[in-house]
Amino acid sequence: MTGILVHGCYFIRQGKGSHEIWRSDITNKNFSVPYTIVSKHTANAILRQAGINLKI
Image: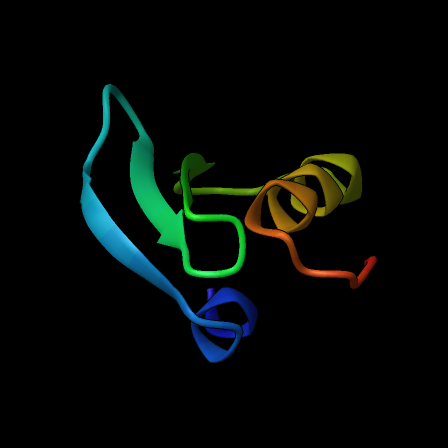
């Protein structure tokens, strides 16, 4: 979570189940983040949705 906080993303609300809804100032869009990210592919997809040009 620290990586997306540094890039201007912030927590919006609790989502359904084990997800949280975050907002990116880069893309001006909301995206969901699961509590536990078990795959690097999932982590990269979250970064891409947030508009962050990093890969794990």
